[in-house]
Length: 237
Image 1 (tube, rainbow, N blue to C red):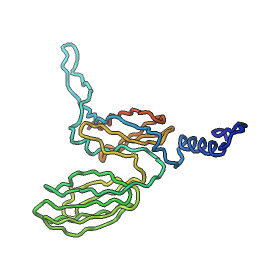
Image 2 (image 1 turned 120 degrees about the horizontal axis):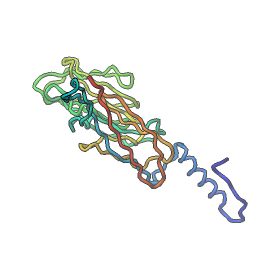
Image 3 (image 1 turned 90 degrees about the vertical axis):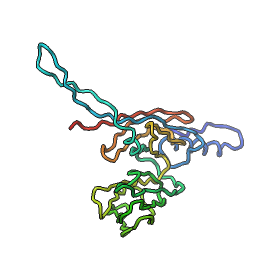
Image 4 (image 1 turned 120 degrees about the vertical axis):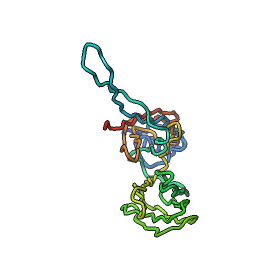
């Protein structure tokens, strides 16, 4: 009622105008109406701050501990996923991604995909691997896979799928599955961009497989780019 006010007008097509105004208002309040035509975007950068304790000598006083931070290796940024929290569901074209088994590691350790996507597990090692998951989102066991072969799974529900190797317990990977298109893996510089974001008051989350997630509120304006930056802290040891 507050969003849709219809004034007296002796013009043909007033009903169509009224419906259009309602749809735009609904999109701005978090409805599931497509807002691709609005062209809103969210972009920014993620950094990982590593606390470091350095000793600084002082002539008149006892040695003091000075806390500051540096940035983690760039490679860790490849394991960060940025996404809209509590985003409205919107069907997205499935994709095909690979998590390779190489040097007794999963490469990459983290992938983000839409619901319905296929995840392939090629084995590049000259030994057997046995990829499995006990996650409620997707439970599977691919059995022993020899060098040069590959098996795959299709993820059909949104959520987090933790992946392991039954033969090598130190091997872990994560599949992030979304039922909307507003997610992204950050690039090597830590940058990301989400396009066609529904306008309104939103929450943006940056997730790292080992550091957990951090969420910030933001206001997304139709047709404008909104900036959001993160520094994910690593707990001091």
